[in-house]
Length: 256
Image 1 (cartoon, rainbow, N blue to C red):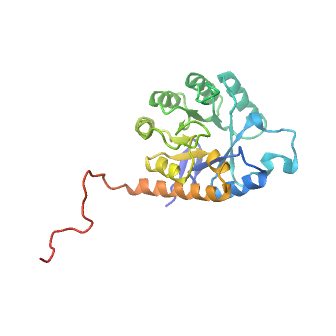
Image 2 (cartoon, rainbow, N blue to C red):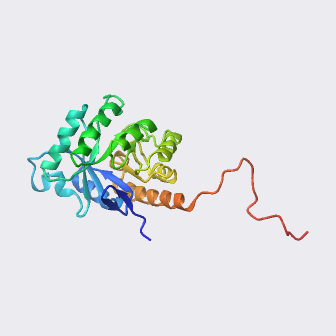
Image 3 (cartoon, rainbow, N blue to C red):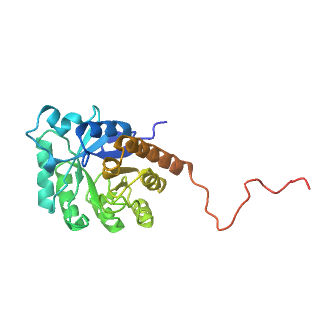
């Protein structure tokens, strides 16, 4: 049975979303994206060199069949983010966008007020919006009410590699909203992805955890396996935790 992730009108069999930043070169990026098994790759619209052609163009190295997810990285106001999404659509990318409105240069935490403001505008204009946000259930609920197709709370600060810092907050969001919840930011290794998926998150978006690894291609493969293992464990349902030991072999009926 296919375990599809549905976000708005889109359906995916891979729950791992990847990025294009920080790779040492385009060939490494392409090989890592292929090894990840990801079907969605996010691209910072404002950092694209629109004059680059052929092998000098980042878009030339995106594996065939991967869906682009233009993002608004580098935007600090709702107006800038909306303008960037409109530009992406004019360039023929897609209406499927990652909304990112930052509020602080040091932590790269999102400005949730501006994010919600931008989301409302973009949804009315027909965009399928995936907003990067804090791990706050009130903001997640507001973004859902604004019409976002998913919410993407951070696991830790962008590029930190710290892993899931507040699993309780993620659980509350998962219990509160009905749209898919994808962890976005802070993932450093495959076990971090597995933790997010075991919590019940519907997917994980990551970039630096792969791009900054000593071997990005091998790490991409590990992230894929972590995502699949975590999802399988969630669907299987883990055993209850106990304060004391419980023998693996029952003691009843033992020959004495």
